[in-house]
Length: 274
Image (tube, rainbow, N blue to C red):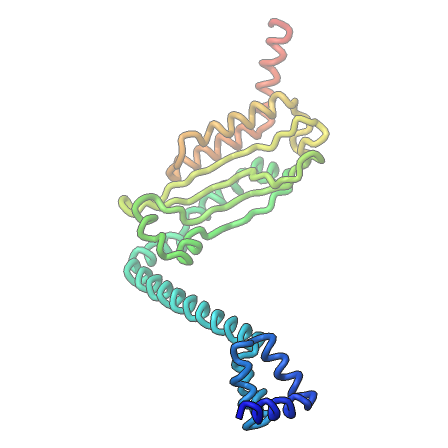
């Protein structure tokens, strides 16, 4: 019997296609050699090749990668679905608070502050000289994209929105954008009050050739002190609408030629010991 089997194998492997197939099996899956030799002997090369596809290392690798990718996708989908459901639940839970905030933003007092700034021609001229661009951001919309943070944020004063008046530096040595004015609008759920945090960064460059046009008749020492004083105006933190209106008025006085003339007069008195 053994002799007959050996002769049968010998005859089978005389065929080039059969020999190449069995060499492939021997190289890739030697433990399956006898099994596929029997399949080849009993059912032919086509059936043997078809059945071997389940064991072909390349196909096994591709199949494993696809299965891994499928498991990861299902895991991501399950995680995403759970997160979406949780976010929906939080948005429903705090619907009243969200509606309240959106009403505050809709009737925003930030517009009043913006108009207050524009009401002073001297501030408008200064901003034009700085070549500013105004930018608005609804910070609350960002929070709505991450509802898991809403519960924590509602405990204190919530940042609702911001406006910037931004310019590029006039200096060749600097390329960063500079926020000349930046105002943030906060809302407190406990007292239902809006407060505002302004920052005034009046432009100053130590190189006189990069001074903005409206300030070119002013000495650099004055411009530096003016910027420092403007920064001090906001050290008290968040302000009410009336307080920020008074602060804007002070900034307009800082930008006036009269303030510079007064400073210059005092400098000259000190210089000549008068």
